[in-house]
Image 1 (cartoon, rainbow, N blue to C red):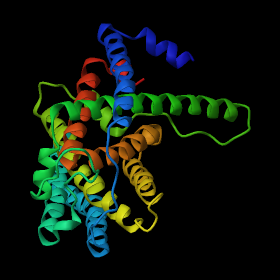
Image 2 (image 1 turned 180 degrees about the horizontal axis):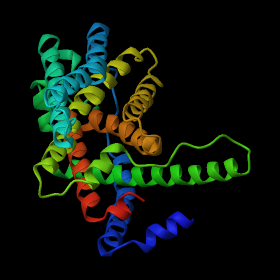
Image 3 (image 1 turned 180 degrees about the vertical axis):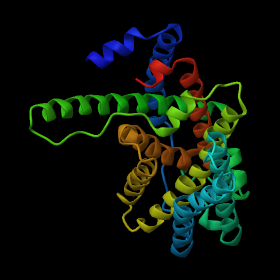
Length: 311
């Protein structure tokens, strides 16, 4: 409580604006979730072959889990000097790693087209298109749909954050009474500290913005919603009732674990799981647009209201 009181005392006008605006969009997001639930359509059994599902699953995991890190390290080392590696160079390296991973997944989709799932898979009242999966994803893209998904994400994110905060406080109290082990530190992700320490009017901030709002969303959506989720879903297709939801839960858990942030694990899980539903209904391009918009929104508030956005 003392930490919360100190944080509130440090609030400025932009911090209060951040709180008010984010609460408003989260409340509107509750209505968006209701609209989402009432949308027509059902999810058919996936038609992708098991071999394509396995190729996509492996390509997504290897590109995100290995290739991204290897290329990032190699590029970062090329910038290394006697004084180490500058922060801007680290994010430049990360952006290069993101592009390499995305390129590898797109390249694999050229070899095995069904390993990357672009198109919506939910049957709706809209007429089916005979176009390519990418064109179907493009046809499923629209600004209102991006806005609907984004608002729903805000509502889910606030609910998950509040649940984590309450759980963490209860865990701390039990620890102080000697009933449980020490809870993990409730600290923001490392990227948050980098954003807070970087001035907007520098090229270093540009490298952060590129990596956060373009590189990461494209790479992560290609990997998790484009390859990993469809692969898991196809492998679980033997269970018509539970296969899809098991794939959604596993994808959300993998997405959360990949960010290695205990304090954001629950919100990241909610984000990763819900984005699978977005991919099913509207396609992968809509997922990318929502992810880019969400990251850009948080990036702006981190600079305008650092106290509130890291509370």
